[in-house]
Length: 442
Image (cartoon, rainbow, N blue to C red; front, side, top):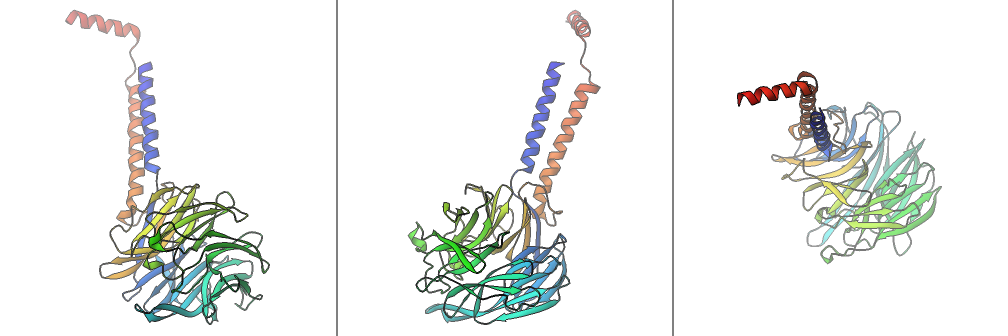
């Protein structure tokens, strides 16, 4: 009886190991592409909708577009927006969304260098996609937005003077809610590229020191602003250890850290030139804005977005020219996983990432399909549990692991039933009798 019990215990241990292997790692659950017409399609921003679907800020050769999808990524409606590209996007409690689009002007050439200029549009849509109002902000570059109660917090800069600022607008009308708050000083501007809003109304911002393509960002910074006053600020990173990429540094995205601090990701070029190459890095900043650690991200030129993901963080961006990359970090900054499922071997990139739940997230970008670029939406799970049913063969890997694990469990349980119920262990007298019979035969 003891040996059968040991066998069953071994089988059950195998089941635990197999099931654990099936659920470990990052699993792709959803992979959907979008074609809006034309040869250039790019999904530039994503936000999780209140009904389980997604808002996708996209662009094509005709301009900016907002898509609403269901949880499986199927399009429900689309709305044409003013502007060329979608810069930032936030979901509202009423089921609608608020976003910024940019009208970008590019001057110059490869010989003389390029310069950017343009305007920003602040746009609010309802849950059916109708535009409720739009606010034109001439000569303004768009960093990020955050919403609380009836206030839209906007962070941007003046292209002409290269000066960063924050500004509040009313959610109901878009009219300015208060005066501008200037960032930086006469010798070093602070260009805000990303922002999050704390529960007490504090804005936490990160960025660089220039929006000019012909200059290097002197350093990446983080700052807290509350009630129109800069509370504190500090420098995260001032340069690179690799001379190939220059000495600049610029904060590109920010997320709350698991311990109450902040996780900032960035690269060394200034805003707008990261497609040319860079050196990605991640930094943990304590709640008092002091640095805990800064780690470089091998194989990631530009980290465009970051969110909490399971017990760590998920970063989305690109690796080199038109090479997509997502990677996961532990709370200590170690790379624990990187893209191995999605667009391997195809020209593409990821522009944004949004949390779906504690253990899953949605990424958007573009991918070259045949001869044209298409927008792409994928969802990833940190636990191996699909958030939605896989819709493509690339998403079937996670489901296949679970099916295999379930099959192993069924087989092992069947074996246990056979040993313990169907094939009952012989009693000692029966064993002796059997042995005697065997001895006579021999």
